[in-house]
Every structure is written in structure tokens, then in C-alpha cells.
Image (cartoon, rainbow, N blue to C red; front, side, top):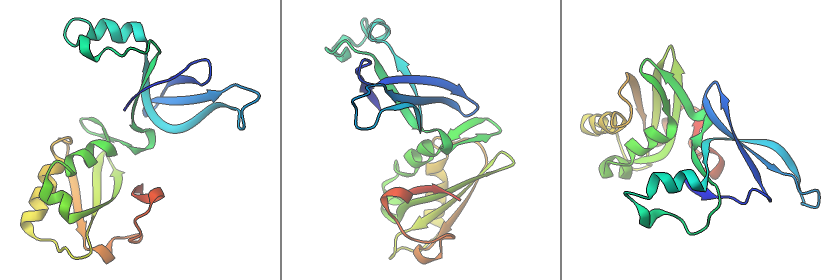
Length: 179
């Protein structure tokens, strides 16, 4: 997600961590309801100046150059949802993107996905919707969908709605979570 920000109101930093770039937010206004300094939201991302974006877009995509000449942020997902594999780092957002590229997969799963990393091997627990059951064809489609963005070995386990380890509740805070 790209976003503009007003650096005199909110100051954003992109710092290097062991998991990648992490965004830190500061609201230094002492009159703000909640002044915060270097608040870590857990989001990974980058900052780009208007001038740099202009240079990148001017020749091939001039119609995408924003009128507002402010810096931009690029949010790439959650920093804690990144996992090491033998080929590099994979994010939960990549896996989710793969799952939802196949309409048959998307209509059969809830979106509640548990992800683990054991010895550089990604393990996915995927929950089916209430009225859906697992079959070999669906399992193959899910594995193919995951491998669109993930080339390393992955162990996919598909659970019927009430059998997912750790519960079945799907809510705002726990749509995609770690166990």
C-alpha cells in the first residue's frame, strides 16, 4: 500500500531489523491527544521521496506521478509475519495472495491461516468454511495456489471448520494469526 504523509505532523522512519525494514511512527505535537515517539506498529515498509518517485515514473508512467509533492510510504505487510525459508524470506501476505488467486480455493477457505516456521520449512494450517470438506482436488489447488508466491517446501494441512487447532473464531484481531 502506498500512502502520502505530512512529515511536519507525523514523522515516519524506516529502520533495518533482522526481519527487514520496519516503519516507526512519531507524532511529536505536544498538543496531540496522544503524542508518540518511535511507535512500532509492526509494519514493514519503505519511504520514498517525491523527487525519487518522480524520477522513477517520469519516462514510462508520467500519468502515475502524484500531484501532491509529499513523501510517500510503502507498507509491505507485517514484519512479524515474515518467515525464513531455504530460498529466502516469505511473508504471510504473499501466501494469502497466492491462496486468493484461485477462486475455487478462495470460496472454500475462511481466511484463517496458521503459519509456523520449523527449520526453515513453512507449515500452513488452513481452515475450510463450515459447509466445505477437504478432497484431493482442493488440496492440490491449495498447494498450487500457495506455490505461486512460495517456491520453497511447504507443509499444508487443511482442517474442516471445527477441527482447526487453536479454535475457529474469525474476528478482526485474529483473521490471520501465528501459533
